Image (tube, rainbow, N blue to C red; front, top):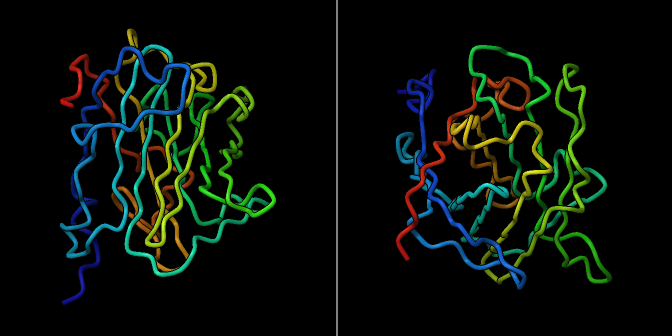
Length: 221
């Protein structure tokens, strides 16, 4: 029997995100511990995840790590078309406005590509993408984002540090909740959305995004 409405659509999700005081440091981006992982929701629809998300935060910004597994072909990223490229796609609303259907100036869209740059097209990249006509203040240049990727035969691991300066309105003390949505696109494995995918207009409608609760609890190592 076909389900017209995905079970994940029936709930409003709020994910606690642990606090990492000294992240990221001056060296390479540290791995986020398993206690930073978001729960798997695709299982509600009888689908297995091919990507695991981990998130952490502090006053200086947001940390993200995505691990993709199950591939048999190299990841193919198109830096000339980041909107539709394979990779990690993130939407963030620093005001968690879930009652409006159009993006505000506090909404951000970011494409994080694990490959595609460099002589051998194996270097990662980050780019902010336009999001709705209401966007009047552009974020800082994506060059401020620290990004790293490890390419494997069966997939990749992508890590990113998004500084607070890149997120207009980021103020965890006053706004400890963020609107958040995430999608992993892959030509071989398909599309894994945090909750609902197409045909729902998650790319432009913040009311479909979920919540991150920025908690002061440190992650378990």
